[in-house]
Image (cartoon, rainbow, N blue to C red):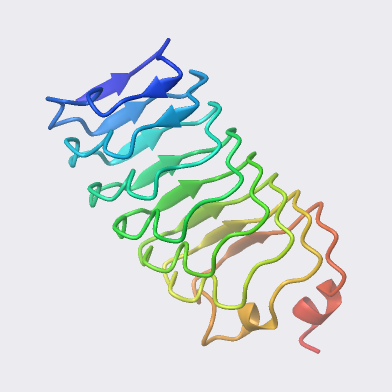
Length: 190
């Protein structure tokens, strides 16, 4: 079952998805949603794709996605997110694509993506990221695409290039329009 929801209220309450047990795709983009109740998706465990892009979300309840063990794609781009708690994606081990572009994130917790062992594509473009902690992507061994364009990054942790601490299958990595001062070090092998 697919649900495209338009003209939603600014606040999504816990009763919105009651009875939608077989819902697999939920698109709630471009609705000016400002908040979502923590248990809004608790009855929709079949969800594999959620689009919450182009809304006004400033934060996410830490347990919002905790029952969505089948979730594979999550779009949170074009919101106003300034922080995401470390446990937010803890139960979403099936997630393969996560889009966090165009938000106000200044940093990401070292553990934010640690349980996303199947994550293949992560996009963090156009945020306000100042730094990436050393082991942020250590457990993301399936990661093939990482996008960090248009951030305030001045450096990247040296451990990102250590085979023990980075995704070995990474074949597309972008850091355009950042203020990196150590680019030559990372890519020259010095």
